[in-house]
Length: 235
Image (cartoon, rainbow, N blue to C red; front, side, top):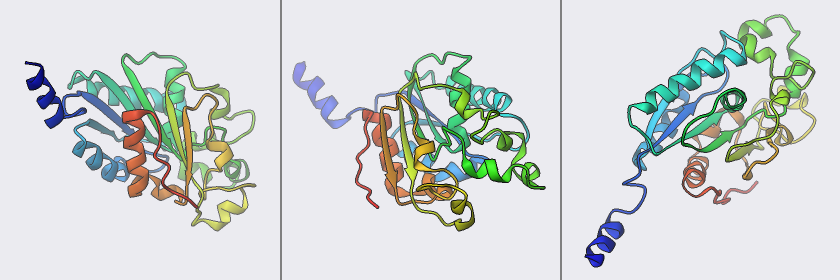
């Protein structure tokens, strides 16, 4: 009997038997399609996946967090998951932080944030008063600075298990000139950090492509499964 159990575990290792759901949250002014590659890779690893599409340019962060995350949780509910994980890009990371200040998520697993402006963005400070900025980025985009109206800076430290991947390569030299340290074209490494983060790594990838980079995706899977990054990438 023991031998049979061993053979079953060996031939069908975890997480095949796991019923874990991963909620994907895209960034500002993006759509769920930007997370398609991440979704397909997670599905291959036998995770259930809910790739949430939400109107990131229409509402403020407080309303977006409820709308997007409850949509994701409702989608996961179908699978009756043993754990619910999150993978977020940019603004998506702020949405989960905001949501957890007011709600508890049952069976919350791990969260991986890609390029999150956890301490706000200096670029937003300089651009938010320029005509057209709010039209392009919406009310949430106005809340992502580092000043007194910064939502990210008001949310406090992490009280959930989170790993963060920050980019160090920029394809937007204009925005990078507005950020006073190493950045991915929109968010600096310093801004991406979050107090009580479990793991952190920086990668030579620009902000718009973090969620599509193969090695980043492998690290996302690694953290969800084991709570640590592989850290194979280097600048």
